Length: 600
Image 1 (tube, helix red, strand yellow):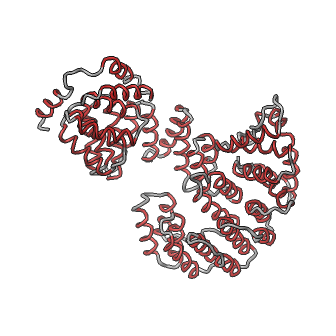
Image 2 (cartoon, rainbow, N blue to C red):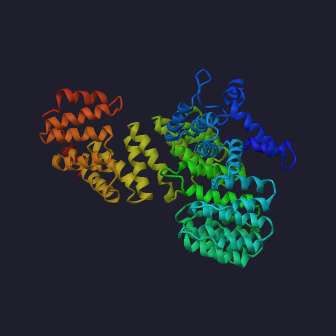
Image 3 (cartoon, rainbow, N blue to C red):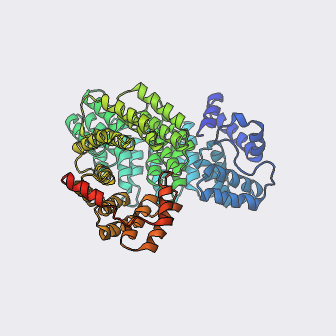
């Protein structure tokens, strides 16, 4: 969960009293979490349920610490936070345990506990920029901008700390009415080159909020020059251009970006407003939303390659400051998806507000996450509801079709793709995916003529598309049809995607079917290097080895393919080859005859 506890206290208690009540509550929770979970399991959300040592086992400092380390290593932040909290309870003076518990609680969205531990860190005089951010944000939410500005201004070290606290301090100064001091504060931040788009975009938003439209344009123009590929900067640039009377230039900026990111809902919404001459208000007027924006910007940028924990801490705090921060929710959901935690992804994606520009995108992702949980019925129901709301939502249609196709429900998936195709007012190049996926479903149902027509239509809409070239070429090869044409298609696909193991496998297989076994071996060996864990590619290489007389290597590859869990349909064939090898009669004679008959 995110900030539900603190929201509850703020609702029920006047002024700053909610904070004292919350901290008193968490002090109790830290000592009695197992009892709480056991007493009211049905009343706790997944994030609140205690995930540490089971109640029937003894709690030890070393056991909890080691368990926390393992959970942290496995990116199970809920369990890691619980175990580190146990270890901290056993050794409450340990500053390292305190800081780890704080950060994990924040990353897991346990804001009440995180606020408590941030205050303990501050009371011990420890230098921790993240705890400063948390406490400064709490002061800001309570309306004490001066205290927030002081906390954000405490000394920190490191570029991430400098940038996040520095821009947050600027927004706090804006909250006190000191606009020029806010701009000066942010402009004075020194750091690496990547500071520039963050600094300039936030200066632009502060100036825009203060009615300084010309200054806002100067700053956002600099941000756009520094990073013209960032969607939030593109959106701000277009809006500020329009607010300065440069409507045509604003639309041009959006149209240029739209060529790269076709139909992004945020830019579509902005374009509609500008084209319709609607008033263009400032992007942000609330300092809390401004700080949430910088936390999102940094958090989304560092969320890969081991930076997930800190990224999640930033994004959770962004959502605490601005519960409607839909980009932060989507970014956090994306991290959970990469960590293969779909239930947590669903939880945070559900935070996107009903009127948010990313709401439908988030709902589509929720459907995919139900599928990742192997809850096909739930995924189908969820996505079908989206399609019922908007029968022309091609993304939802493609997603439902792809979910069904992944479960080999090809007939049902075909009908879904057909709904999308039948609903098109006119067929456009971007609609190639509908025909491509329907063609796959038709081929898998052995409806080859209809499949070939769809695949060729997809290729007509998107010429030289490597996925279509590969699938159509491979299908032709697999049936021994039009092999010369198929070879040309697959050679083109390999040229376009030389490091795609599946496409390289297709090239090797067409050489095999043409009887060019030495060339087949060369390509299939490369395909296995690119995709070593694929049973089909290993099986193909075994076949090619057999044809060139490398019998021991052939059986080795077939045994490897067997161990890689091939489909139920293919396993008996592989076992037969392991036992008996391939027939001595070349398997390509019929294919060659068919190729000659069909003119290649």
